[in-house]
Length: 444
Ligand code: DLL
Image: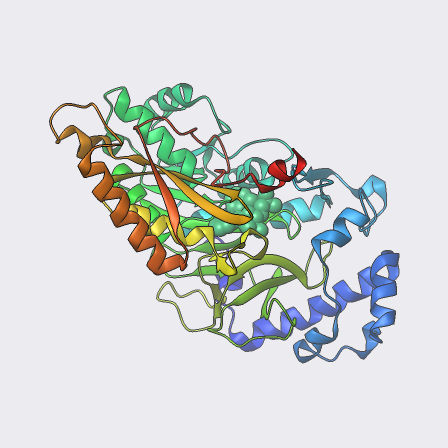
């Protein structure tokens, strides 16, 4: 463990620490961020009236919209000269959201990321191939500082340029790799096309996150690379990667760095707190951040929590794998559809490659789903000849089978477009799995 004492605190000591830090955080925003002062006043909370964690639910929520409204620096709680770094979201759904860090924030962030790498089995001296994007996105620099702090030989390769990545993996012989699951999948694919078996590389563990991925995708990545594939979660509003990390021993939920981030699960509709084990929206309150403290941030991510003991010995609560995002939920002919439910079905059928995307259209006045999915080159290779015909009987049977399985899971009918191997775009960072063409159609 990178910080054994903190990672194995008894629940009683942890709660005491969280309560002290929560009070400090509320004090900080009360005095330094007019937005929070107003919100706290309107909900009748004064920092001195906070007794303990049982009062957490009295604090106001913070939403993504609040960050946009306060763009760019309205939620910062320190003077400009104390901010040493800024990150920002890409702003594909509106104005970007901007977050800031003091020197101490960067240190805390590096610590949680160093912990995360150690949780995955990383050790000082490992060569660590960091394929998260560098730049305004938090993935690259977040993991970079963590890897350096751990004492790893950090390779800041960033995303993209797959052929150079393959050369560097061969030449530098990393033990650990970090990147989005979809990117590591596409890297393996290119390796195999060049006649290199990813199983023959030196990599032993992979730290994968920044996008939803399934247990089936874990099995695919572990099989292809011959590694432990572990889930890392985080978001820029809370800090970046390192908010939580799945341990190699348990592979069953992600340990939240609870001494820095206080988790809750709430009902996404009512905001009411839910108990451990119940699925709902993840909410985080930062406990140590100086530049950009955040109260009860509604992440939009769906998960559940457990405080049961873990075989790795860490005492911090675990969150489940992210089931999906509330705002990614599609309403198709009145049925709620979570696109993340598609992946296990596709990966569960050996005829398909793990490359797919969902198109959402409007046909007449009804919403319609089309899944574009690549067939597995091996499977179609064994059919005799590599020519793939999406109109032949076997393809029809395959499409019908997938359509039926998806109908059972999603509750709606999905058109299936079988694609030739290698024809869908490959991910360089976060995979784009859903293309909603409905708005574009309305504008026409
Ligand atoms: O994606 C931070 C990060 C970088 C996490 C590298 C892990 C590794 P944002 O760009 O702000 O930050 O996006 C945050 O991505 O609210 C989730 O919806 C999604 N996400 C992040 N990690 C996971 C994960 C980074 N392990 C948003 N599983 C979050 C599922 C994830 N979704």
